[in-house]
Amino acid sequence: MRIGEMVRRTGVSERLLRYYEEQGLLTPARLPSGYRVYGEADVQTVRRIRTLLAAGLPTAVIARVLPCVRDEGTGLVPVCPELVAELRQERERIARAIEDLRASQGMLDAVIAAGPAERRR
Image (cartoon, rainbow, N blue to C red; front, side, top):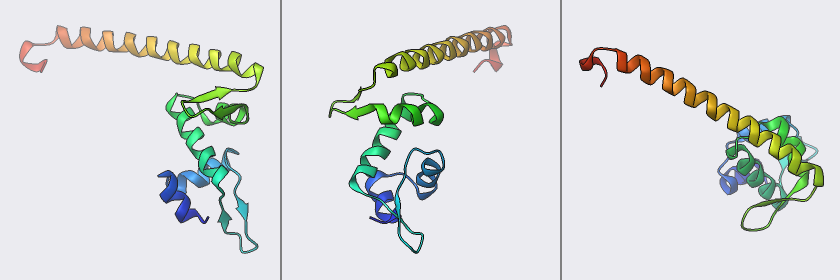
């Protein structure tokens, strides 16, 4: 299928599909004219990429993770033993980021609370 059909099937813009290709996440076939041609497996790959992005993983990590996951219908399942350790590290990174954001939120709450009552709204 051509890129327009891929956009329709995945809901991902042409620009993002090209970005995924630049990042090494997606490798469509090329016609002699240079046009990209996608297969059904590429549709599934884009869905996995979207799931991993939604989980908070950066594309550099997704490039390493993607070959080591399969879709079981209910979610992605790791198939490479070393993948679980890397995913745990990413989870810890996200947990630290959440803690930092909560601390920032608390500081903002304190600043807002210190202000005049009519300006707090």
